[in-house]
Image: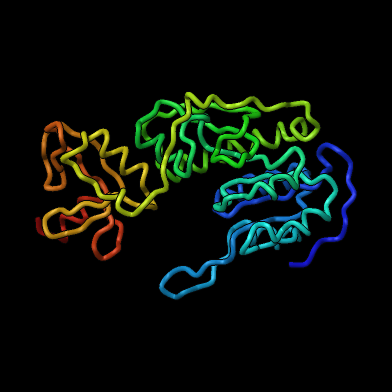
Amino acid sequence: MTPMSKTTTTSGTNRPIVFFGTEDHSLLALRALVEAGFQVATIITKPDTVKGRGKKLTFPAVKTYGIEQGIPVLQPEKIKDIAPTVQNLDSPVGVLVSFGKIIPEAVLQLFTPGIINIHPSLLPQYRGPSPIESAILHRDNKTGVSVMLLDKAMDAGPIYLQAPYALDYTETKQELYNTLFTLGANLLVAKLPEIITGGLQPTPQSEADATYCSLLTKDMGNLDLTQLTPGEAEAHVRAYLGFPRSRISVGPYNLIVTKAHGVMTKESPLDLECANGAFLAIDEVIAPSGKKMSAAEFLRGHSL
């Protein structure tokens, strides 16, 4: 890791930003900052990963973008190792969006006013790693984004501002990730100058109102219709697209359900009875072959 040369800046939008991010949607905020003219001095992301059957080395999207923009990219195994780089900057501001690692307090203290985070929920609701999936799964009628100051406790820091977003019970996980992180990026860009200069001060969260969500695991994808109504099962499908994915056995076949809806009467072998006696009508699946297909296509090639 090679420290950058000392950078001298003025206050406000000219202060250097150290951007922490790893997931694909982190790029929405990074690109918004760059295109708005903020000085992104360094990108911190997790190490490259090996993916797929071909064991291909894959870069985080923010690394690829950083290389294209000529922004230095660091991928430390230990976050504390970035200290020399940050200390060579003049009054750096940290921005973190879906980084995927805990930031130690010693690193938080390297930044003024600290590290600013976009969290995709209306905190203190859904602190934790799966707020978007939780909002869909629980069939909430609204969610939103919070721009907050990172704290040593998980998602418990004070909040600068929030923006609500109404849900209509059709959103999929991927769609809502894109929507909320775009909303958060726009909010951040609009208000970051006030945050940097101290014109906008954060408000502490209410601990009494805090709720939490957990890390997603593969077994959460098991679709047990004996415990779910059709509405709950359909929300499960939308919430868990991509990972952990809604899995169910139908006859001799293990299927991944990618689209479904509720019906009152059974008209197809892929209309499956739920806990309340109504049915989940499966519209689209990933078959055991790995191919995505409509329910009609699946039934034409498979006997139930």
